[in-house]
Image (cartoon, rainbow, N blue to C red; front, side, top):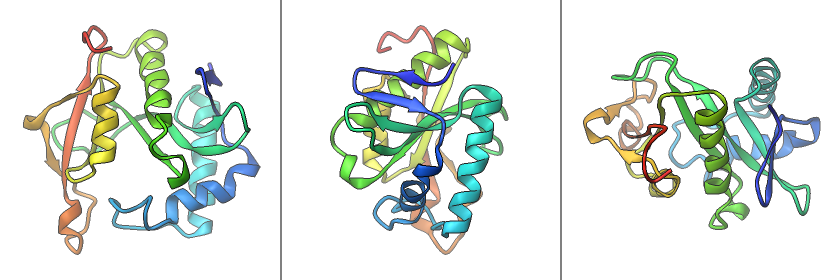
Length: 184
C-alpha cells in the first residue's frame, strides 16, 4: 500500500535520514504553536520509530511527505486510529499532518491529506474520517475545509490531555467527512 504518490509528493515510510526533520517538526516553537509540549531529540526519535513500525505493520499511518522533485522531506501526513477523544468512538480514524514552516502555504498539506483521504475511503473502506485541532489553529482547519471536511460544532470538545496550564489550547474543533460527501 505504501508509498502513495500524488502529482508532487511521495508519501512513504520514515527513513534514518528523516530524523533531523522529524525532530524539528516536533520541537520547533512555530510548528508546535498549538501543542502544550515540545519533544526532545530522544522523544522524537522514539516516536518516529513507533510511527515507522506502525506503517510497516498496517500499511498506513503518519508517514513522511517527500517532495518528489527534490527528495526533501517536508513533514508528515496520514491516518491514525484514535483513542480517548471525547464524543468519538475509540478506533475512529483521524487524518492529520505537520510540516516544517518552509513548506507552508504551498498546498502540500492539502495534497497529501487528499491522497490519504482517498486511500482511507477507497482502499481501507472507512465509513468516516475525522480531524480535530485547537480552535484557534486556522491553518489546520483551512486544510480540513480544502479537502472537503465539514465542521461538526456539536462534537467540539475540551481535550483531556491538554494541561490546565495551557487554557488557550484546551478547546478543540472537530471536522468529519463521509465517503459519499459531495465535496470529496
